[in-house]
Image 1: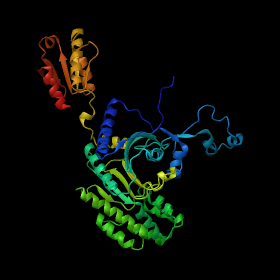
Image 2: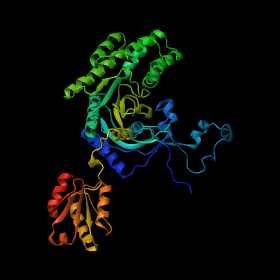
Image 3: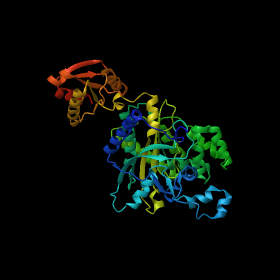
Length: 456
């Protein structure tokens, strides 16, 4: 019999890993709720008509399609089968697909429920998504996203609060060295105008590859797409400009004197910085990155990307403003902005940096050990009282040697063990053992409950 396996690009998460992942989920969820976002879930499967055409040509190729139920080839034109062209067959044998992200399903939900939603609508969503990508370090076919989006307002307060939420999430996770890169779609449009070309999208696609393939190859790609050398040079004169945020703004303003789009981008970015100041926040961790060009098939305003410095992992968060996403589902003129955290990459980065606290890995606060059937049964009463006090408690289920029970608690990293023998049953003075320090003391149950409640 073959050994069982799982698909490439997916992972099992054991109890120790899940405790750490839950630590990430809980901290992100608390921040989202603190800023007024409400929880939402959508189905794992969406109609392919909902998903296709929303992520660009490359994104469409990464959609996992779900075969129709039953004999899905029964009504297919035999001539299409003979061509062996899967693209011709897809629409006939598959009507559904696994969600690629949480943003498009959210837009679909907003349109379907617009009569019941109070705008501006703030929602957060923590669910898995699937992409038929090539698996590699930090890139999986199944992974979780934690999204927060606001729709129904074009206020730049939303962008400022995204920056605040990112900072607060990272602070709660213990991540200190990170960069929030910000750009604006209109600034990139201003760059395109400087080239004299009408082919904005080709410029954006090429610039987005700058980190991966370098300046030389990006210039070469632009030349093959019909951009002239003078225009390319003017773009890279801006992309390569070094300086403070204010120096970059002043430099762009001089370059965009005749570009209304470019001026709009600069004005929006400056307003976000001003709003952050009004919140009492600094520009620490914020970088104005003129070359940031992610998600431009749907982002129309500010663009965000977050990287943890000094780890071999790509961006762990990203987002931006989109003005037209609900329009494709029949609800035009509803602006939105959002951010998404990639939990799997956050997990890998935190593991690499050893940032998970010990309490994030403990399952139970205390385990009760015993010596025989009588002390085992007495332990059940003690366990019930501790649980009623909100203390995570487990009883070792078998009568066995005390060493085996203590080894079990050590392996599960349970910080405390209550040892109950006949003397403890008689006088009510229970032995509480601190597993990390190796110290123990005799206490009544009420005092043990107080001690554990403080430590938990």
